Length: 587
Ligand SMILES: Nc1ncnc2c1ncn2[C@@H]1O[C@H](COP(=O)(O)OP(=O)(O)OP(=O)(O)O)[C@@H](O)[C@H]1O
Image (cartoon, rainbow, N blue to C red; front, side, top):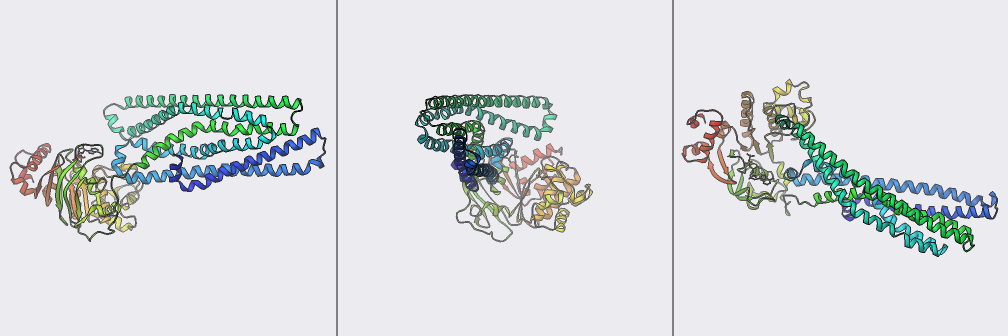
C-alpha cells in the first residue's frame, strides 16, 4: 500500500528519503556524541585529566551536538513536508478522480463519507506518511546499525539486545492486528457520522415537515456516542500497548545494565566501553518504542488510505476515445440515437432499451414519460455521465464516443430542474458558463433569460451574494438564472429539465419566452412537464419503462385515440384541474 500511496505522490518521495537519511545521520551523530562523552568522562573521572587535555574533545562534542540538532530539524522538516505533499497531492487526485467518476458515482456513495475521506482521511494520512513510515524504516535499520557498533564493544550486551529486541515488534504486531479491526470500525463510524450530518443539514426542511428532527437528533447522538466508545477502545489499546512496550524496554535495559555493572565490578570490562554501551542501549530501543507510539496513528492513516485507494481504483463510467476527434462539425447540431441500450452498473434491467430517435438541427423536442421511464438516464447519456451498452449516439454523423467527454460538454448547455448555485455573487454564478465573458455579456444573457428584472431588485443587484445552492431564490428565479447561463454559453445543444412544481404565472411566462428565444439559436431537448411546452415542441418522444413507445409531432399524436401521449396529457390536464375531454383544445 505504501508503494501505491507514493506512486500517487511522487513529489513526496524525496522529502521522505531525505527525512530517513537525516534520521540515520542523526543516529551516527548520537553515537559519536556518546563515544566522546564516555571518553571525556573516563579521562576526567578515572584519569584525572584537566580541561586542557579534554578541551578539544569537548569542542568537537559541541560541534556534534549542533550537527545532531540540525539533522533532527532536517528529519522533522522533511517528514512534515512529505506528509503535507502527500496530503495535498492525494486530496487533489481524489477530487480530480471524483470529477472524472461523475455525478452518478457521487450520488451512489454517501457524500458525507466522501467528504470525511477527503478531509479527515487526508489529515490522518499525513501522520501516517510523516511519522509512521520513516519510523518504520528507522526501527528496522537503527537497531541493526547499533548491534554492529555494540558487537565489538561487548559481545554479551549485543547478544542480549539481539534476543530482547525482536520481542517488541512481535508484541506490537500482535496488539496491532487486534486493534486494526477496531480502528476500521472507528473510521466506519466517523464516516457514517459525517454522512449523517450532511443528510440532516440537506434534509432539514423534510425533517421539520415530518416532525422527525428530534428522532434525527437522537440518531446523531447515538452515532456520536458510538464514535466516542470506539475511539476510547482504540485509545485503550494504544495506551495499553504503549505501557507494555515501556515496561518491556525498561526491563531489557535494566537487565543489560545489571550484566554490565557486574562485569564492570569484576573488572571484566573497561569503564569507557561499558559506559558507552550503557549510553547506546536506550538508543537501540528508542526507534522501536517510538514506532509503538506512532503505530495507532499510522494504522488510522492506513485505514483511511485504503478507502482513498479504493476510490482512486474505481473506473470512470465513460471511456476516453483512443483516437479522439478534437472538434465537432459546425453548429447547428443534429443528434441521432440508434438503438441505444444502457444500464446502471448495479442493475440487471436496462434503464433504456433499443431507443432510436433524431433531434434535427434547430428543432425542439419534448421528452415525456412517467416517473422512472428513463428521461434522466437519457440526459445522463447525452451528457456522457454514462456509456451506452449497445447502439450509438451520433452528432452530425460523428459517433459521440469519438469525442473526449469534456470537449463534448462544451457543446451542451444544461438547465436542470433545480439548478445549483455556488456561494458567490449572481454575476459570478452566471459567468460560470463562460468565465471570460464581460459584465455586459453577463447582463445581456440575464436580460434574454428574463432574469434581469428580479436581479436588479436584489439588494446589491448582480453583486448580491446568493449563498450556497441559491437558497435566497425561488424555483422560477433559479431556472431563469440557469437559462441566463445557457444564453451566455451559446452551446449548440440545450437540454432543459422543466420544473415539475408549478410556477407563478409571471415566472411561467418569462420562462416560456426565454425558451422560445433559445430555440432560435440551438437544438433543444426538454424534459417537459408543462403542457404549453409540449404543445409548442416540433416533436414529442414518449418513454415508458425505458422504451421509446411513441414519437412524432404533438398535434399528430393527439389525433390518435389510443396514443399513450394523449393519455399522458389527459392525465396531466386532470392533475392541473382542466376539464377532461378538452385536452386537444387546451393544447
Ligand atoms: N443511479 C442509478 N442506479 C441504478 N438504477 C437507476 C439509477 N438511476 C435511475 N435508475 C433506474 O433507472 C430507471 C430510469 O430512471 P430515470 O431516473 O431515468 O427515470 P425518469 O424518467 O427520469 O424519472 P423521474 O421523472 O422520476 O426523474 C428507473 O427504473 C430507475 O430506478
